[in-house]
Length: 190
Image (cartoon, rainbow, N blue to C red; front, side):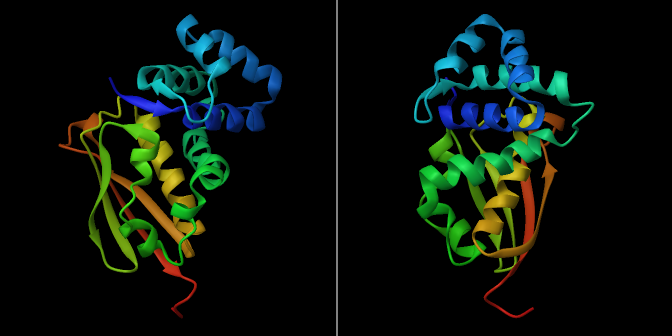
């Protein structure tokens, strides 16, 4: 069964609260299916959560906020990396360059989701392509969240003006999901 770390749930909740307030967040949690609401009220950052519970939360949030805040998922991904990601895995994120972040042996994806991985299929020092393997995203919220998270991760690793695009999506009929990204490097004059 696919799982996610509780940090993904807590990051989503924290971002939504910052966006709409504590009362509106409580209303959204109450709108979740009982299993989801019960679990997300008590989840800790390092707990393993069934991925379908996270998808259920994202679905409720997207249905409630998507029209007014169409980029909430991207912003939530960035928020999560900035807060819980740095707190839990600063040594993985805070690298001298985006290339160092992307090419390290430890997979940030695998610390948050199982099974599967996000693999580098191309990297040239100023751009890269990442491919999702052996993981079913189930919802485009996942894919959008990765755009925001990857953008923020590239910034934390010293990349300037990072650009991340989700260019292939398994949910749209492609064989896999892929993200193209490019950045500047503050340590190298451009």
